[in-house]
Length: 223
Image 1 (cartoon, rainbow, N blue to C red):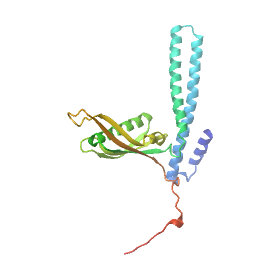
Image 2 (image 1 turned 120 degrees about the vertical axis):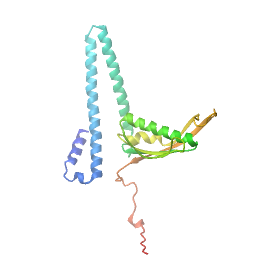
Image 3 (image 1 turned 135 degrees about the vertical axis):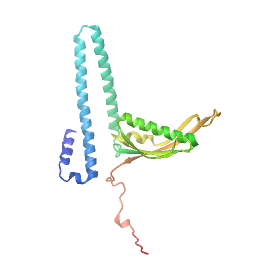
Image 4 (image 1 turned 180 degrees about the horizontal axis):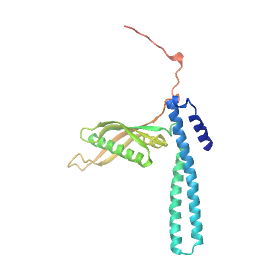
């Protein structure tokens, strides 16, 4: 990773590097991601060393109160490290072509009337909150309000490490079953639906579709 960082930094020193803004953005984002991984790795080593030092202190002390405090700190630190390692291992499984891309998320209300529109707004708030907790940058691109409450549809962009890799599993139809707050005097359960679509955002350089020039027919007309 350090060799990769050096190679990417050398690219940024090229006088013509910033002339291609899309390429420059791609390289700088990749450089930032790799640097973050190295910093995380080195941080783990430092914290692990601190935990071992605490263990040595605990073993050398005879004060039971101090030993209990050290044991508690070691247990908490170990738990946090394990949680971070599990997340790191999960991200290593996100090895798809677009998993590390930004994501475009669209939510559309389905069957269920006002309840479905309310459910759509609930999903939007849930996803935005989740993105906030992960440190993702979000931007609402479009919203269509419902007649009484909620949203008919909403689209937002999420930018951050493995945004698409995490969010792509949300694709599909989401169902909510509850007593409707919009139908007074009706205790029956209301089933509402909302559809979620997740699309990776790329710079268009992946050549997703190749078209042979011989297959193109051009008609020119003039009036």
